[in-house]
Image (cartoon, rainbow, N blue to C red; front, side, top):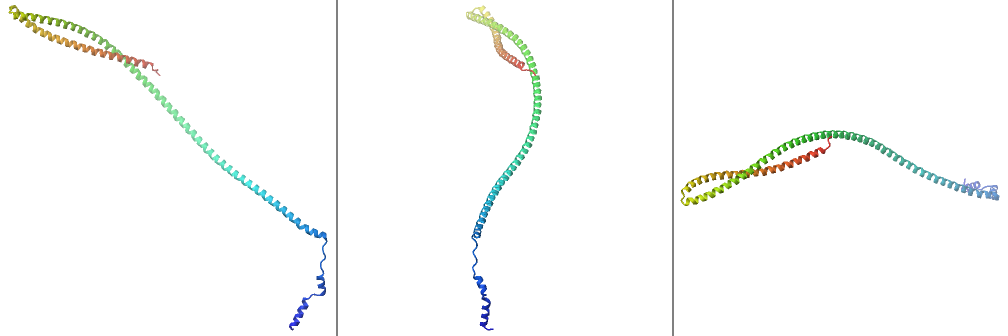
Length: 267
């Protein structure tokens, strides 16, 4: 088959028939106006419904989010409250335990204090008994001391009276001795004048005077001894007087101590 024949065969197959061309060339008939209106309104209605659905979905999302937020807050608050409750329960348990321990400790302390108070009371009773015994012994010793001091004072008074009497006698003896010495000295002076004048009787008298002088010396020694004794007696009197004042002071002190001891209540 030649090229030309092939082209003719192909063209014959591609070109449609006359009827087909007429059919295809005929334009379609226009639709009625009502159908066109329905076709135009249907997309708008669908779009409005879609918007409403979207709005409803958005509102539901907002409500769901708000509810989720509130629920989350409530859960957090409940968790915090639960944690706080557990902490309070723990603290309360510890406080109760500590209170119980403190109560036991206080009870033990009270028992120990009672025991110490009982021991202190016993010690005080023993101390009071010892003080009373010691005070009684001291008072008895003071009574004995007072009796002894009173006896000593009586003896001292007697001794003072004797010493005063001896002193008085010694003074009188000393005065008499001094008078005698003066008289002897006067007589000796007169006798010496007579011896100087050559009187034999005066010589005898001189010998007697010499003897008298010796006696006078002896008497003077006795007089000095008596004066010394008198001075010693006066010193003794002063010592006795000082001792008497000391004894009186001790007596007054003992009386005051006894009065204070009697003022202390005996238990």
